[in-house]
Amino acid sequence: MTLDLPVTTDEILTTDVHLVQSWADLNALKQNGARTAIVAAEGSYVTDSEGNKLIDGIGGLWCVNVGHKRAEIIDAVTDQLNTLDFYSTFYSFTHPAAAALAEKLAQLAPGNLNKVHFGNSGSVANETAVRVLHHYYKRLGRPKKRMVLSRHGAYHGSTHLAIAMTTPGYSEGWHKAEGVVHHLAKPHFWREGDGMTEPEFLDSLMADMKASIESIGAENIACFIGEPIMGAGGVIVPPAGYHRRAAELCARYDIKVISDEVVTSFGRLGHFFASRDLFDFQPDIITTAKGLTSGYQPLSATIFADEVHEVISAPGAMFTHGMTYSGHPAAAAAGLANIALMERDDLPGQVQTTGKLFENTLRGLADLDIVGEVRGSHFMMGIELVKDKATKAMFDPDLNIGMRVAQAAQKRGLVARPLGNILILSPVLILTPAQIAEVGGILRDSIAEVMDDLA
Ligand code: PLP
Image (cartoon, rainbow, N blue to C red):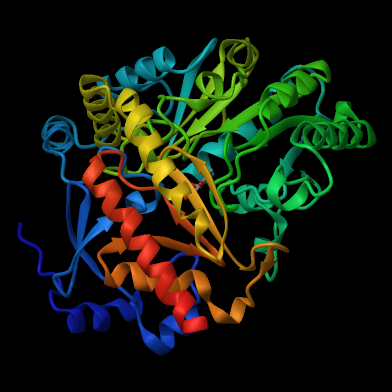
């Protein structure tokens, strides 16, 4: 069936008044309409409704890892829909694609992470992780172990519990799950580590974590959740050794560790999973989404340790959790084809070279007057723009500096994501060296243009 979709920019924007965007200024949308309509995509590029071809510098939303319009994934999804469009994994039903993808994830995930529950978003994967652990401790006769340690600056999603685990500021004006989450300090050395060396800063973070555990009481804490690199909090790479030490501390207090790899997995940092391969720690649960299907289908996974599964599958337990579309056949097929493509082309291995080139190209922008810090790793980068480099003083938010640079970049053919005064780059992982150089050039010219405006 050919769909009768709006085509011109005017038609799209007129139709769009019924759509409620996510994480958006709804009043601005009511006044001005949507900023950009993306109508097509291929490889490293997206096309807007005006016919402009733009480098996808944000990979959809940190997710289109293998690039757009890959026939291998589209064919696998189509074949799956032609064979089995839908059946659930409720009760004792299963189907080949969900079973095969769970097996594949168990092979790829580090250590004893061999059990997989599927959801359809990162938020749901994180909610599932915490619910599973609540159930686990209840089954062990320790129902008081329910608190979650998270961090200022974290982003774990926007459902009721996930937003409570996210950095507190975003919950203003909303209700959130109260009394379940404690936020530890943000591990951002450049902003928070004044007067300390990086190892001293790390020691202070660990002391804060230990003090928090002791004041809350380990008998009340189920888990610690952390992104290996904070994404939406501004691309924060913690000090070297942070995750390993945090995991050791948690193990000492019998607190489970959830590694939120919704962004950092499936090649973005040069590995299928970053927890063990890049950050040298073994979590009890990994959550993932986004790059799991490269965004071709909505799918998330909560991958948990055998030991957790042993407890929740003991006689008398009933797993009263799951979503209709958990392990949807088309989504599972997209995941399998996506992983097969990554393995065939050794995409994670390639990213160890091209991602480093991308990282170093962006680090080269640090000489610009308003670039305070360029941070991140491989294809997960953030550029913090500051009013005064020496004092790290921030721009007045009303100046909309991040948005102005993003608009200047879009004019030059690149989609970048503004987040306050931070510019986020999380492109498709198939950028060529020439495209990486182009991105660097566009960002340099765009930042320079905004600097000229400010002068
Ligand atoms: N966790 C992290 C680290 C994320 O970056 C995101 C989304 O950006 C989420 C969880 C939530 O994922 P979703 O938007 O699919 O619910």
